[in-house]
View 1 (cartoon, rainbow, N blue to C red):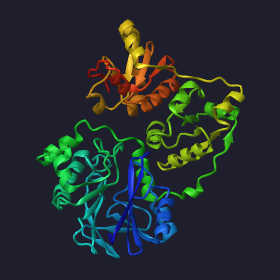
View 2: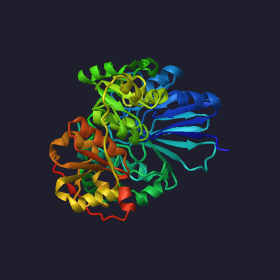
View 3: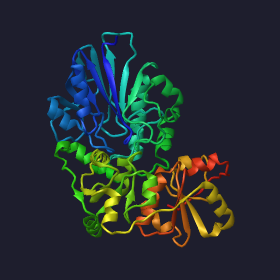
Length: 468
């Protein structure tokens, strides 16, 4: 039996991993999410006392729960020196350590993703033959490394150079069997090539991670910074919030039901109706002007990227549970300006005497026929990322990634029918709602996306990127 236990907690909505390390009744929590009950419940179930809270860096893509967890437990918070945190904490330097039970946690300063980034090397003193574990934060992922463009004082090239040193002089000097546990998985905005695997080893990453194949610092810098997509605008706000420490989630107000007439009035005042139902339900009937982001995917991340943190929102959900879940997920990225939810859902809108909007859906066979018969009267809009479309796309399609669509609507030929698609349908439904919200009426969503196109045996090519 291992004398040090590791529990992993994964938030698919944010592709975020946090960890609890415990030994002899004491525990440390690493990179906690904002809603901290999961750590408190796990500790209570196992008879552990949370004494340490460690942040590998000041996070930019979600609101951390370090302050609330400390308030509940009395634990001390640890951050890399120079974090700028405004709450009580212990600033750690290279080689500092924490020991409890049979667990030893040693801090490694690994600047690059951020200046204060640290990794935590764990060793089980009760089982010296057990391979070490390194909690790598956003320094090293399975399949990738952290993006180097999150500092207001250093260029991406400077951070990439620091990251190269951190990787090659710190992490890659560890034994090959050292297990790595990163803070993010596939889908996170903190990297661009992450694996679906939850963990790996130093040896495996040394062989397979593309970023570790660079033969020099200069090559690594170019690899990371050439064609680096801009970080989402809300990242800077998250950093500021995490340096101050977020308020307790218990302070979130109970959302009020809003009658249809009030929803319409708030829309006129600038509020956005955020429809969280499944894509098929949204396509069939929704409040005109709604933005659709289904709860089934990376809901909070897309909401923050598309709407920003301060846009007043009205939620449309399937049931009270989904409405509460929506509010919680929004709070995890600092979106708390929620006025309420549409009373009785889409049925309440009908009872209010208001008209619905809908978005036509097309099958891939129908699109293929239209492309053969009337190619000059339509545009196929591909909202996938360039890394996806390079592997194939619908011939003559126009590529604008979803995260850039709102800023580049003027590039679309509004006089043509726009058929929008992504990989399987989640992002294209968001994109179709953005187009409609912007007043572009002639929009069709492609059912099943490019996966359905390929499955039907239809031809593919490299798409035409829109001019940025």
